[in-house]
Every structure is written in structure tokens, then in C-alpha cells.
Image 1 (cartoon, rainbow, N blue to C red):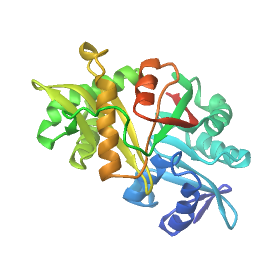
Image 2: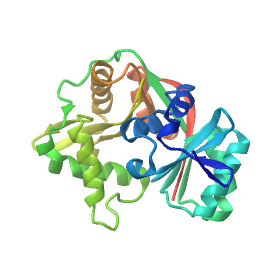
Image 3: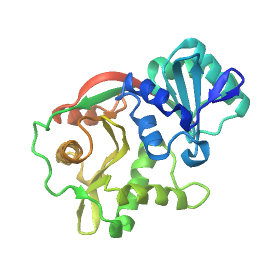
Image 4: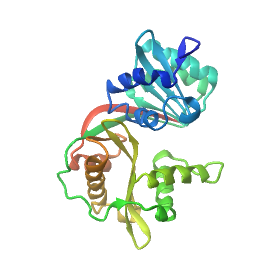
Amino acid sequence: MLELGGLRLLDDRDLPAMAELIATDPIVNCFVAGRISAAGLAPRRLGAEVWGYGGSVLEAACYAGANLVPVGSSPVALRAFAERASRQGRRCSSIVGTRSAVGPLWELLRSHWGPARAIRSRQPLLVTTAEPPVQPDGAVRPVHPSELDILLPACVAMFTEEIGVSPTGADGGVGYRRRVGDLVRQGRVLARIEHGEVVYKAEIGAVGDRTCQIQGVWVSPAQRGRGLGTAGTAAVVSHALRDIAPSVSLYVNDFNASARAAYRRCGFREVGVFSTVLF
């Protein structure tokens, strides 16, 4: 491990220690687990740094890439992460993780990184390990790579509606198209497509050793109120439990009453609270 101002920049030699830290709460740490499982801890392969904090035992870590994601909420570790992040300057589009970590970390970074565009302070973290008690939508299926052009407008619409900005960015959407395409090729985007248009879609955005995480749930505005969100998500949960992981998680904005009701009908239960700071 390379010492960086009291932190340790983790590399592949730290994989066992990082695995132990992630295993303390695999549901909470699913995003980081999925990234590390796919690429290891070498920054060049990962496309991000992972900072570690602790002595002989890794006490906490922080994924520093397109998102800043703390793993653990030790106050002394969060101070060290904030010091490193403030020196480096903001390179991420969000801070996301448990409310107990994100809140204090943002308080430490607020004066260095300026005002946030939005703060989602309470996002219930939900999980299920059982087949949904509602009938899954049999028309929801993995998207074929040849359908990427059909899928992409729905993904852009969902992202823009949820985050408040378009994901296409300065490159005209090349990078976003590549990321969505990668998920499609991995069989991790499911959708109901009617007459060449997506009416429901969701992604399995992260896969850890013991759980996976659903993201990007979207129903076409013209089709809302018909139960497609509930039945579609039930189909995604069934697929994930059967083919990907023994538990399925997601987090949702507390003010999204319709989505929270749909997830309850699918059998999800609350196990924690996330927060997100958006830039």
C-alpha cells in the first residue's frame, strides 16, 4: 500500500482486506464490491482510486471515481478522506453511501467543493431475498445488443428525470452509450418493449458476491398508473434471484411515494438509509 498523507492508496495486494471490509455489510457495499470484483484495486484498471484507512486492520475505505463512495463511517477516517478529497479537488459527480457517512463527509467538504446542486438526504435502502408476492410481467426480458438504439432514449429520459441533468455530457453521449451497452452485453438490462418503444426498463447496475443492486427503474410517462412498474420490477427481481445473486437491493428517494409502494408490493424491506449529494 502507498502512503498518501495518512491514507493508504489501495492496490491488488489489499484485495483480501478490502473483501473483509465489504463483507461487514454486503448490501450497503454492493456498488464498491461490484466495481472491485470486475477490475480489482489497481487504479488504472479500476478507473478510480480506493483510499484505505486503518492500522493492521483496514477500518474504512473510500472509492474515489465518478462517484465518491465511503465504506464505513468512522469520524477519523471520514476526516482523512475529506482532507484527501479537498486537496485533490472535486472530480466526482456525486457523493453517495450511508447517511451516517455521507452527511458528515459532506459537512467536511462543503466549504471546499462549493454548493451542491441537490442533496437527497434520505433514500431508504431496500432488500429482498424471496420471489415477489405479485405476478411478474412476462414481457420483461433482457435487452438484446441489437436493441441498444431502442433502449437508449429511455435510459437518457430516466437519468434526466431522476438526476436533473442529461447524461450525454460534453462527448455527446458516447461515454454514456458505452456504459449502457456494456450492461446490455452482460445481460443486466431488462425491459418491456412494445412496437419499438420501451415502456418499462431497469438495470442491474452492481453485482457483489452476495447481492446485486437494481437501478434506473423507469416507466414511460404515457404508461404510468397501470401497474407496469410493480410487475416489471417483480420480473427483474425474479430474474436476478434466479441468475445473479441470492439477494436483490435498491435505494429510492423517500419522496417517491409511488415507487416505494411498488417496491413494497414486490416484497422489498428497508434495511438502511442512503444519502446522495449531487453536483
